[in-house]
Length: 416
Image (cartoon, rainbow, N blue to C red; front, side, top):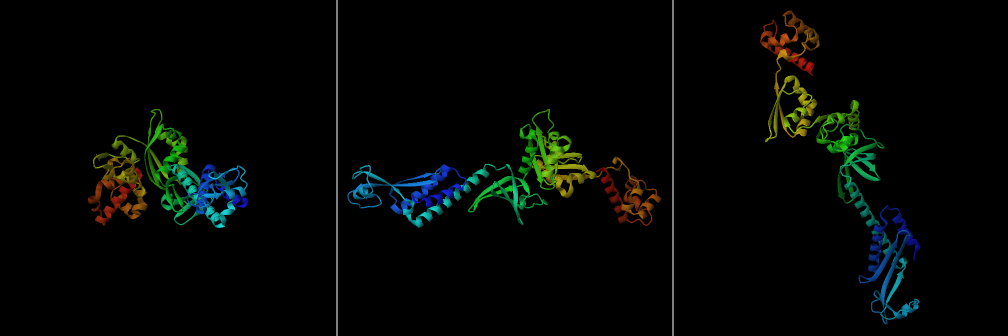
């Protein structure tokens, strides 16, 4: 047998970390096709691939006849005798001959090599697909090896994973060689092999981080009932304890916030609010809009709508910076939330403000004018209202309204 040909195939096999039995089956199938190409579809043969020895043996079986009509299926008794006929076979017996690989010619051998490579690549793709399909929803740790304009390529167990821009945490910087954690979000079959998409912006990534950092969640003592998230900005997580002795929120935050801080750091300092879940939608909405204080909640469960009433100084807390707080509350509770602002009575403000402290906001000239007309402290100005202020000499309606608005804003900021 041509040992050089066998060695080339054996080396190809050794380079592939595939199951030996699977590879043996592929080789036997490919060489079987090669035999059929040379000896026809009706040929009787056997291919034996020994992966441990790196050996490939092909045996062709033909019927012994007096006169050969089909050389692919028959062999003459004279030819058998010439080959030795040690088993003293006769006409009608089956003659088994071991074929040399070199007898198939270079073209067929190269074709077999190409076919083997192709089949191995297909199996490798299928193995990778199955491996990551089993890891869907799990966190992986990989190394960044290429940062492109719209995505990042991550190396994980010598496989290429894709972190697209829409799955990244906004404003997070990625550098080649950095280690990154992400959740396996999706896997697609493509002509070039499996496309494995990972995510750091998905809610599932945050859920898995909670499971890693908080043993009570991993063990099922605390359940995560809902997650609403705007990656890189803020997230709200509703939790519920299955054990009355365990405070769900306290367990998630940890001693001195150590548990939640570990998650916040991983998410590029994303703020995380952990709240207690409630089956009562009114209580749930109230908690979801924390830290704002609500005066009234009107619920329409059928329409999935909710109207909340709050003092004017609480509206900014309800809405949050750039509206993020109310958007997350809507996502978390599933209710469309409308806010009605109610002016807070002046007498309910906890602390008054001296007009002298508002020189920067109102200007010194306006403060002196108000004090000279006995409007001090600030609550006195609000109580007087626009109607009284316009009675002051040189005070216009527009200027009076502006003064009232500025002082109201100052009280609201003080309350916050």
